[in-house]
Image (cartoon, rainbow, N blue to C red; front, side, top):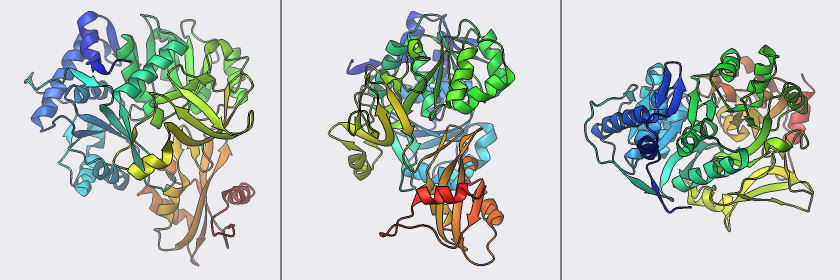
Length: 484
């Protein structure tokens, strides 16, 4: 892998200017057009004071302006900080402060939230899409070192405090290369992006497409009817979804899969076997994948040829990735990952980095097993992690907020299986007399992203504890499951 990386978009605009780079609800846009727009946005950022190395935060739903911003920030040698548009002001303000952001860019629908978060974080007032600067010049960064940071993406941790995962140009390049070698890429391919671009699964499509010189079909939000139509009419060959999206797609479209679709990449946690079989019966080339923010997306992906024979597997490691399970052969253990896709660490968190990466191996905390042929089966997305509708929810973060409520003395948060969402968040609390769980839920909704707020809060006399005073989540889960 080259130690120096030229501006990927500029290269594509130079060698294939007329090729379609982006398809959205306004039509098709060539690489030359996208390159020109990125220049104008970069000039606007420069005029706002953004310099090389600065962090530029983005608070926005999917749009072509987001794609332009991603490339513009890179073109200045700045670092992108995508923010989850579902977060509350308090959560956003923490990430803005933690990343020491120089500028926040919002779309119009989120400007009020962004402005409030920026004030709390003592960040300048946000710029609002669309950004333009009438072609003003700026010092373009023509190339990047492979270890230069491209973005910082926040992911929660067991401490309850989100950590900024630094992803480099080398990480993103290695991830894109590994995916291409596994799934195959042809010149006319189009990858449909319906996942949020503020998640690594969505952002990786932006970067892969420009590296491959292929088209990206962008949806502003997930809608199963729009997804069905796009698969049939927009010449889509690849699409990335989570299991809930696939379920909803099949619920509204029982016709066989469009023939040009070669890959339906499903991540965000294990996919129910019944759903895989249903998709296979309609000819959907579903391949499960396992990945993390810390690895710039995919770690292992099931090759399309193995989709039926290895039903339920996440496949084998990509060619740019090494993977092992810390346990006896064939037995469950922690999944460890190494290779050029692995983050150099968490932004200004040396202790957290040292705890996660030992001797070049990322300790994921996820539990899996390798079969006799080396296929990975992911058994759990960390002991405590809840994956609800493809969104990661860490109990410690939710518990920390619950314990801030004046009536709550103790709290435990777990995930319960749910046919629609994979898991739902539920909580058990020890609380003062007179505390009303529904009132506590309302209080939480103003302080936490909606997908993290427990769907149900149950009052209990006491939480099951170990001798050392730690909550036994397994017993909490059993207790709450019995109260349905």
